[in-house]
Length: 322
Image 1 (cartoon, rainbow, N blue to C red):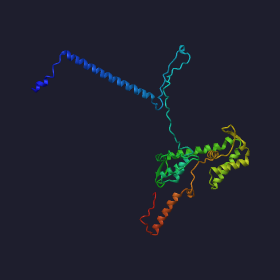
Image 2 (image 1 turned 90 degrees about the horizontal axis):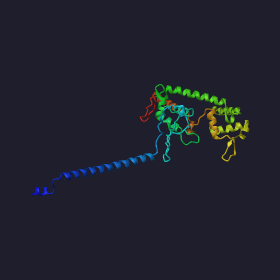
Image 3 (image 1 turned 45 degrees about the horizontal axis):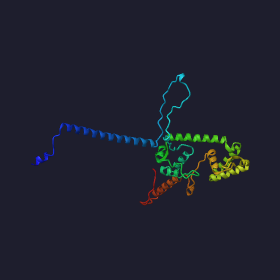
């Protein structure tokens, strides 16, 4: 009875009904495919529009232009045939070049050598010493980009030097070339004076002699001292230089020569080979080899204790590089 009730709801489809169902299914399938294709086309159109509005990154690749041989009959007025950028399209972005530090220059390399000579046992301390050096008028240090791995590319530990850091042989050769070039450039600068001292080389030479005399006498020479010496020598030997017009200000008024701090620093760097260094307080009273003297003192204390059979406490540790 139950099976009869269920089968009463079904009937066998005729051939005509089957054909109609087939056509209806094909139409629905075609409509679905058309809707999907339209959706894909809209998505692609949005992607292309977004890509066109996006700012390009990097510079475009250079394409080699094909060589075209022209016949004499083809030569005519030059016509611009290059691609024309639409008015709404943004220009290609230029790739910026990163900052590059030339550590081997005569302004930076002497400071690196001096820092490692001052702290021969620790490159970290030498790097910290360098990064505290400030240029006059600047808040940042030129050695902020210098890293410990870069220093290790130049220096190595040696058993003969008490495991202290020393320059590698190949770097020593380059350092000698840098120093020779620096000395040669200094000789050229002192042989041919330019600028305000072009017609008064004897005044510049006298300034150099006075500054070297102060330095040899142990006097601390800074920018203010150099400025005072230059002003005094020019006042005594070439007072007319202060009446010389060297430019004009924003209002068009003539500007006369004056010994300024920046001019004094540039003169000392160009004609004396002096470079800037950080100002120190209590550390200025220490000798250059204070670390070596401290080690020797520790060795003497240990030797005296062993000679006189003095018991060394367990808490006393004498550091040594040997």
